[in-house]
Image 1 (cartoon, helix red, strand yellow):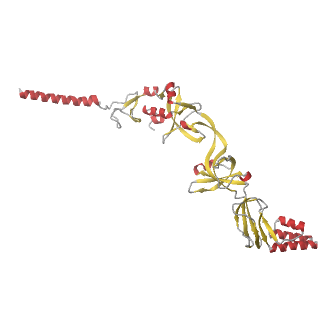
Image 2 (tube, rainbow, N blue to C red):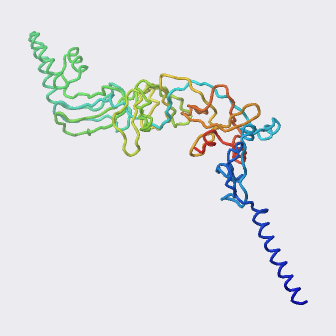
Image 3 (cartoon, rainbow, N blue to C red):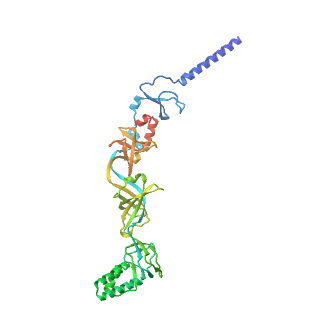
Length: 401
């Protein structure tokens, strides 16, 4: 009897183990069949990783759970996220229209004000002389046209003046004209020659005056110096106009043309904006920054624009074209693609778009939307997250692109 009870218990253990093995294989984790995919099933997916699609059922490689089928009827019925108006208000969902706006080529760049290098006067001595007196000037000072720079003792000028007075007394018009021409050739100022004609007295010392108004860039004379012919006395840069050197990225250089409008905002607090036009596209490229230099010429009444000042510049092309645009805040940038949440009768779905340039607070839409459509401008990230959890995507995403 004892052995019969032991044998019966062992048999029960074997039967129970076999039953447990079958239940675990068939009830807890049903086997993956190799049957053909049902016609109404689009794909299977893991709800925790909805963007990954599978062509047959089974266990998720990401989570310890079975893949969930997505049916064609579900896709048609829920092509977007359905939200009631009350929930939309609670989520702060705000809509904006896809509108057509006027777009011009617009580039924002930094710039530095500089001198107009065409407005330069260099005063030199054409003959030898001695510096008797120098006006109280230094590089960086402003000087007016006609102001005295220095007083020179020039023996050759004095001798030429005496010669002109002598030939005038002879009454020979040809000799008088030749003597006057000689004064011009050796560098005597026209105002001094006119004085000599009117007063009839020669001088031994002469004033050198500024030919233009502007800034003294170089002053190379001192009292008591001996001058030689051709020596530079002073260099003056005019300030009636200034140049703005704008650094434009190489990729945008082709959008700038001579004559384009430039809106200039100076860094100085309270400085009013200034409008200028592109006067030149310089041919050389800065190899370090990969930028092209654009020259903008600005009028400078009153000398309020100072070389060396920094500024922000907006360059705008003359021609304008119409383009569709949405608020920039409505665009969802994922790194690989750009999306917007399109609204239609309470349903929201992702739409992949191709972006153009930014114009103020709007972004141009090259493709993907039509005029008059409504996109989500606020709360779109919550809707995008909900669409991800439901495995919804753009048509390109649904095709695995």
